Amino acid sequence: MIRFNRAIAPVSVLSFDLDDTLYDNRPIIKAAVQAQTDYLNTLPGYQHQGLQQWLHCRDCALQQQPKLIEDVTQWRLQTLGLLLAKQGFNADDAKHFASAAYKVFAQARSNITVTDDVLNLLDKLATHFTLIAITNGNADVSQFNLNNKFNLVLQAGLHGKAKPHNNLFDQAATHLQVPHKAILHIGDSLDSDVQGANNAGCQSVWLNNQAANYTYKGLADIEITNINALSHLI
Image (cartoon, rainbow, N blue to C red):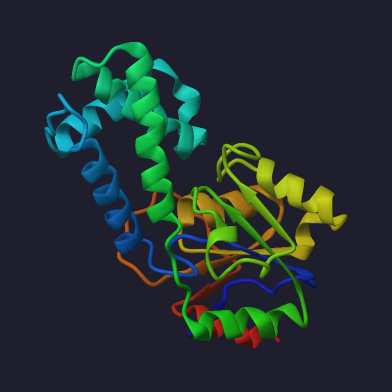
């Protein structure tokens, strides 16, 4: 299904969110968290206390440094550090083991295989549009089979403020030397993807394929229920 809520202006750039747009991110995150937990459980003196302790440390990290909301990598590192400190690890050991735990997480986090139909779709779209990625996540595209599919990859934290802030969209327009309206951003979240693109003056596609509650009440320019519906843009 593809539904046009507004007539769209000419587009030369397709911008993609990654997680839950080009692949199902839920099993990937589950596996990465498990890898992180397995590593922590090998540390002498570490006692696993479950999800509630993790969430508590995560909230504490954000309270101490509110800007972590823009960078999920640093947020996880700081949370790991607090978690280990609460377990009695000294500052140096907490920092060292937090970094090591994050590396284990990150390796599993980017253990992603995008399906052939999505790869083929991107190849077809690339013959008509410049393809880029704008993501709030921390998957490393160079480590899986989306490598070399995009002319530009912008990641929140590493390159700028997280969507729905317009920072990454502004950078994309400047880098590609195109007006914002020439960028059509595709993503699964109304709150980050559609709101961010709309606020930045780009055009938007909402991949509406999962049950979720959103606060943003604006409309995407286009709504789809399957990523392959983008073939209609050709």
